[in-house]
Every structure is written in C-alpha cells, then in structure tokens.
Length: 160
Ligand code: SME
Image 1 (cartoon, rainbow, N blue to C red):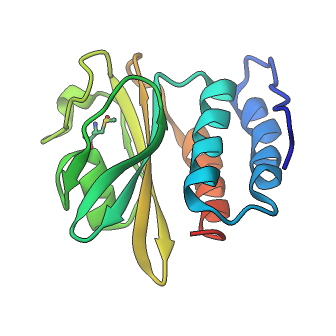
Image 2: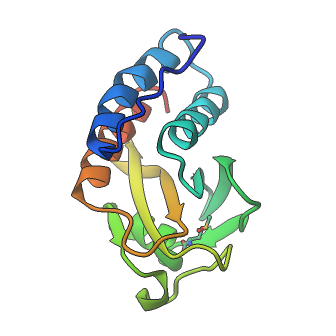
C-alpha cells in the first residue's frame, strides 16, 4: 500500500476526487482485511475532502452497525428503512440530502450535521454496507460527489 497520501490542494472537489480515487485503489492493493481497508478509506476521504463525518455502517443480521469512521461519535445501530442510511440500504441506491431537516426520519447523530450523502456497496447482489458522509454546511453534496464516491464503492466491492 501507499505510505503517504498525496492530497490535492485544488479548490475544485472534482480535482481532489480525481487525485484520491487511484490512491484508494493503491491503499487496498495487497490487503484483504475489511476493517483495515475501510479504516484507511475513511481516513483518506476525511484527509482529502475534509468531511465533517465520514464512515461506514455494515449490514449485520437485520441492522446496520457502525463501522470504521472519522469524526465525532455516532449512533451505533440503524434499522432497515430508518434514516438516510437505512433508506439507502432498503432501496439499494445513493441518496443525496441537501437539508437533513427536510428528510423524513433523518437520524441526527450530531446537531451540526446539515447535509448528507449515503451510498451502498453490494455483495452477492445485496447491500453489504453503506458509506455515510455528513457536512456541517447545507447543500454540500451533488453529482460530483455521487459519481466519485460511487467509484469508491465499486473499489470496496472488490474486498468485501
Ligand atoms: N444521519 C444518518 C445517521 C448516521 S449519522 O449521520 C453518522 C441517518 O439519518 O441515517
């Protein structure tokens, strides 16, 4: 794996993602441990994109359970269909929430969180985990984030 992350200083987030995605590929190359890889991916996303909170919830039996993350402490368990994470799990799709106060059933782990994006990763056709990213700014996520983070989810699907 790479020993140091080269972080783009560009103000353009598409540019920063462009530098990051190949480095995430390099980070997981030769390592098969799921917790180790998810931990480094959460750290790489936090370092490069400076997200307020970024982490994983893993499907365990009939719930999402908190996995590797970077940021303030968070809720540990989420049920199917609940909150943004449980909805992404249930529907198997990316969900962008411009204003969390307007998302019915949003689970507020931190009152500082204002907007959010959640993306699923699949194993054998079923959602195995979700990536959750929170911002302390309203309307912070768009198609650029969705497309780049979907690339990250496809990389994750290689080792889960
Ligand atoms: N807001 C999420 C819960 C997880 S925390 O944001 C880390 C949700 O509504 O599912």
